[in-house]
Length: 122
Image (cartoon, rainbow, N blue to C red):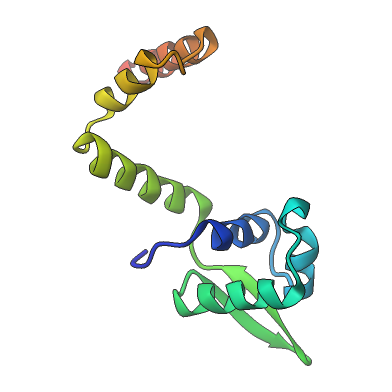
């Protein structure tokens, strides 16, 4: 994915990743209620996502149905890689160390990481 998507655009993507295809009105109804966006705001965001080629649309009568072109997993992988590259020189260990130093890793997190590492070793 060449162009980054904004936090607002990401909210729209989450709706489409959960369920698609949807009309602009259906997306507007499903976007987080705390956003309090008008249908026009959602249409603007859909237009931006179309121009970035992360969603597509097809006509159905007088309305359009929108669907993602980028899978959620692919997006998360790209954003995770970008974060590690930008802030931690592309290394995972400094990221984990950073979180641990700030007590942001719980005992549950440690147990899950240990289980993951055990699986990866096998």
